[in-house]
Image 1 (tube, rainbow, N blue to C red):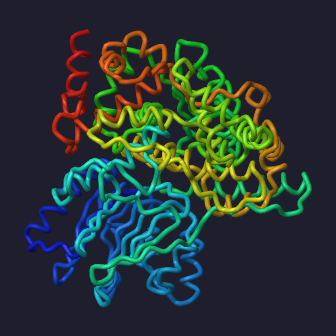
Image 2: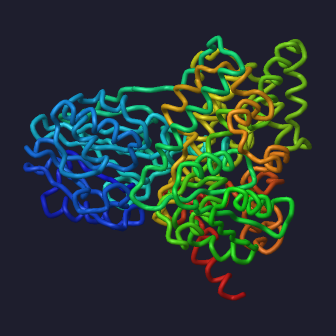
Image 3: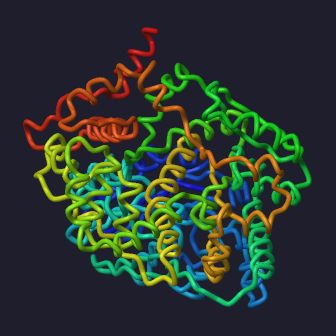
Length: 619
């Protein structure tokens, strides 16, 4: 696991390029504190840098940038290729020799032999850049499911890329200009929708895509996308397939030269990971949980019971409001882009880091693939019902959008006046602000008022059922833009590699063949049938989710932090997550000194990390 960055066709002299690369290494050091290195091509056109968190092959043989023996190809790589030993065996059978035991060298050999098609063989999470000295080109790729981020800025033939947006900003080569469409998308969804970022001109390389840079021009190609099928399969066969695929995925995710732990809540997904992983390890697993005094949010007792059942070495952190408040400045400092989520992963990652772990597994992804959210029932119902009431739905929708209505009712009203498609219904359920509210809020961030509807349409490739369309949106929108991005940034803030066995391309290639009536059966029936080891007290408890008591905190001890946000908002916020949404955005703009038009409300000093720290020190 690493941080990577690069500059192509920089127009800089050697010394200046080296200084910029050193700055990248400094800014990405938290992603890889064990080692760092840089490469500059012979003619100075390309510069690459890597910071390494050593997980596979802890020796110096795994150092990056890594080059082929002839010096033609040089790679920097962020992530893990879980099937690298299998690929290595195949390469060795064809006569290849290796100098290290790292997956980085396997990627390099695969690219040398198969070119850009090599990414189709990788089961893992990755951001990759490979410079070709002979061809004077660079191959840049992001994993099929987008677990690891990769951002780039392209202008006048120059390409700059990095694992984090803030590293690009600190390069001094990118204008600090706010992206209007990204702000709109963020306010609508609570996370910036890819490929946008909040910085104008900075893009996320889409998941399942690779880019080739040559002679100042780029070409982007898709190599994978989620596509559900509807194979004829029995219940019994589906259970067998799920069990085998889960076993294979978790076994791959346990491959490591350092100890591996697991985030354990009281839910089905993390318990599934613990249940199967505990059968594959020779020593007891390390498990980690955050608990609270508030019983509505506390999963600590259930997690401890589960940990005892499977014989894990369990650590629980009882987090209170004051302690959480003291962590907020560091959380804001480490955030790469704002989100209404992420603080939970930040805290549990700190717990694992403080106990000496470098690798943990998470149950993230189980809900999206096995129908764990209410959206799988509500969204299809909304779409079907709206089609039945075409003659009156527009009038009802306008009525529901009146000022007296709640935020959720406003979103429902907007959906009824929109097209009766899955993505519109999905936003009505998951959205934060309505398009009308976004127009009123945009002025606070120096952005010209623009109809928020422009960011609402979400392309969904043809899927067999409405339920499959919801699953696609949960994976490609909510999970990728928010959960995976937050998980990456907040775990790497503590130099911790977070692995997600449910978000595995080989597993998903298998699961997407199972029809929705089985894969998304109510109560995760197929998943639980495949893993009978999940104890009764977990499978029978209501779904809770990994949530913190933010409403209690924001109306209590944290109130002074959010008071100005709530009182100065041009619309009623009415909920903690809407307050948090604006708070996080203002802090991102202030902390990164993003350029806004003069006179914009957001150019005034916001409640930034230093002021929070000052308030905390006064307690």
